[in-house]
Length: 116
Image (cartoon, rainbow, N blue to C red; front, side, top):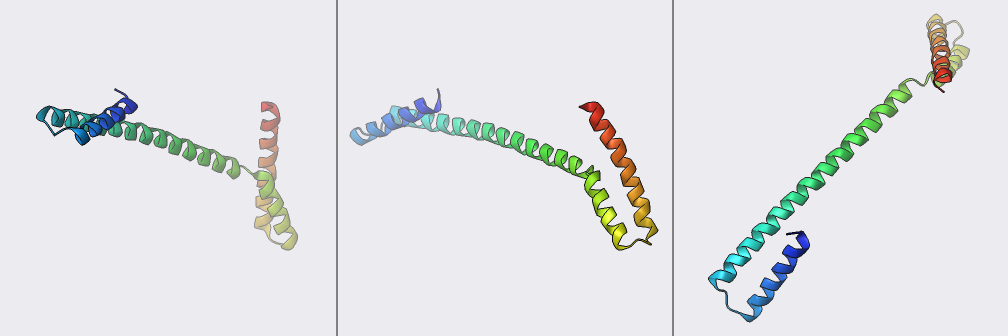
């Protein structure tokens, strides 16, 4: 039985209770209907939780890929290091890091061109 049918049956049984006395048979039907409704509700909750879990996994993967993409933003790093080198031209470490980032940009851009 689907949820709609179980709900329809529950409404029918409720209507019967308004006009008839509670008999052992009617009570048994009410219990069966209640168990079916609870079981169906639990199963729907499991399906929803599964969809939510998949959605959370997809969101986590998107965040991971964005972080990977951002960590390879060598052009921005080069721009920032060039600015730092302009502000502190005697700082050897900045120039060393700038050279490394420029090299990474060359390698990365060459890979991007060959991929496209």
